[in-house]
Length: 89
Image 1 (tube, rainbow, N blue to C red):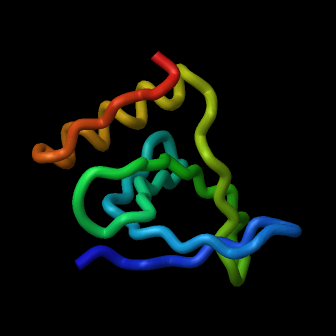
Image 2 (image 1 turned 180 degrees about the vertical axis):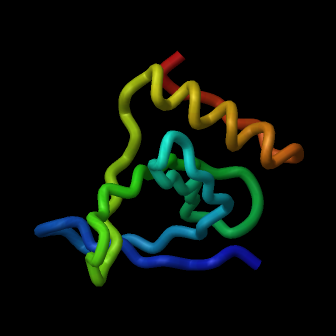
Image 3 (image 1 turned 120 degrees about the vertical axis):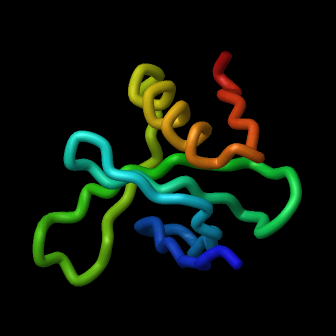
C-alpha cells in the first residue's frame, strides 16, 4: 500500500496524492506521486525544495523537460511494471 500525503497549495484546496516512489539525485529528493492508488492514472514528479530544519516539506512539480526526462528515467528503472509517458512529447 502506498503512503498517502496531503498537499496544501497556497490559496487552493488541499490535494491528496499516493507516493509511488522516492529517489535522491544530485542531493535533491524527488517523489513520484499519483492521485489513484491503483490502476492507470496521471503521475507527477515533485521536487523537494525544503530547507534543512523545515517542519513541513515544500515541493514543486518538475516542469523542466531535461530534468523531467532524467528523473522519469530513474523512476522508470525503479518501477519495472510502470510505464511513464511524458504528455509534453
